[in-house]
Length: 244
Image 1: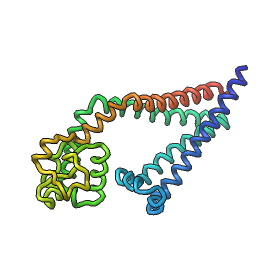
Image 2: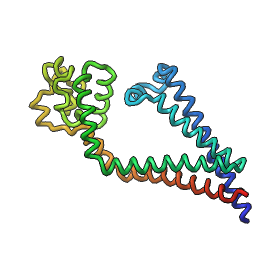
Image 3: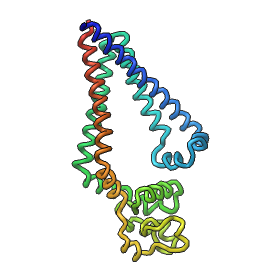
Image 4: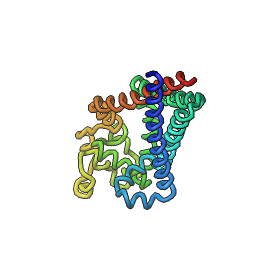
């Protein structure tokens, strides 16, 4: 019965990691495609993909994620099939490092939110004052963010003072800072007084609020991922310890 249980768990580990391996190959292929031929990617997936690609270089992100999944899947499959203790232990250690990094990141995010806001303010606000209104991609990213989160700037509307947009539009602010749609800019300008009276929340605070509002869903996803990682580590250790 013990041998049958071991064989079953080893087989399940092999097929589970085979799925991870194939997902890694798929992500790697898409990442390379996006990096080499981003135009075709945008044509197929439409304007939403363009917005996403402006937040982060999706191609490189997919390649990195694909490589990690590829390596994990390969080590898991190889270790389960050949009963290689070295491959299984490497698989376990990589998962353990990822798990610890996720827990550490969550703790830092919870404990040092105020500190993170301070340092991000020192980085982001000067960039807004320098590039918003002059750098097309940077401006589009912020417009998409402010429209999606219903927010204004990183801290508030004052982030846009002395920016190229502010100077070129008669010292007015983006319409999102006055709860206006982008199409209303020509009809009604967002002046200092209107922005002050509307008091639209900064995007960092709004993002934190949205995360707290959806804390149950976010926590459930995080717990699910953590549970899968723990299960994979336990199974790999079980197989490792029962190899003769």
